[in-house]
Length: 539
Image (cartoon, rainbow, N blue to C red; front, side, top):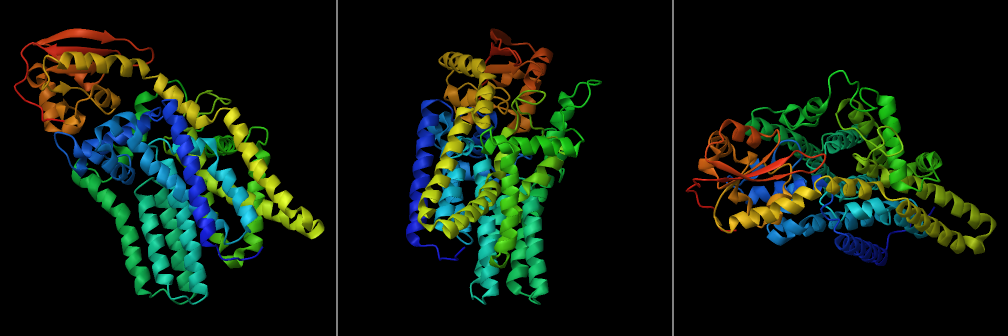
């Protein structure tokens, strides 16, 4: 394996091709009305929108459970109302992250393998239908994959600069620090990534007798400040520095609310790390490869990683082992962190959190690259005239694999489709009803909880600040105490706070519709007989 410098032409070609793949996927997703399939994607855009459009705008509207960076990146785009409503706002940061991921993966691979092999591995990664679909949504996986990949890219560059006595090792270290902070503010596995990566950096410097580096300690303070700032935010805004982990909207609280006493474990991997590992591993396999390959694909990836440890260790390959971090992280999280994974062929035969397996895609691509490199080296030794043919065959195999995954129906797309099917009736019936009621009260406030079905507001065409919702603090509490005097329209879902308030204070309210959607709480719409005096701001 030659250590050829990556040429500018290669980088530009990767950017151009990955941008074309991204655009094609976006067009397909738009034509199939799939940009808003995932409820979580809709919720991410809703959080970003309410920071700039609510009765109490500001960063406290970022909430406590999901980390803030994805929402901050969405804010400039959800500010355009139509982009918020149709989902284009979510496409832009995700698609850019996908393109950057492709560029980063290719750059990483060119440290260790030839262009032929890097192209084959990139084809496997970039054409994965699950990834192509997710990058057309506001889901956080494309952004985190980008951060994970570029963490390794900069770590490898930092270590090689350090070993060669380069003057830019300090700059590389800051690049690592910045991408780790971004990962910390994107997903909680980013916290573990930052801990392992930065501790390893410290150990390297300690062994070299360079731990007194001023740059290292300044960058360390920067990295450590990131999670501390999030804890401080939770303590300041919500009164509990661990609100994200044990608050009413945390994964654990939701799991406890949905558990049926005496019904047994809520999911197969509950408090069972081995079963959790099996679920995550299987999900990662079928997210990445055709079912025909099965566990053989995983074995090849592990074998390739071991080959890389042997043949490219002196080229800073060991940093790439961080790509396997999702394995222990999700084995633990499924077992003890209240984040189950369901796949259709294993009980309970459903689709839930299947996108988590996508985090293994870079590790698989790198592992397979070393297997492919070994194969090409053997061909070159015995039949050198067949080298280009063998390289083309590897690319064709990568294309075939992704075609098979598409034919077998990508898990993330199917899960998203199931997701939107569950709320389709409400999204089709409530917005036109609200628009009709608003014709006689155009400035009237709407009392409703918006976090569960945020698209109801976007599809109605009113700004969020024309609603009184759970993000409005004391204003929401006052409206619950007297719904008819604070809102012109009230939308209640069976069992929620607004529904309870209407039952306790029904005076002045007239029911105008009840909407039934199997599997969803019954929605009831009321109008106020007295009408509030408050006038909503213009959109």
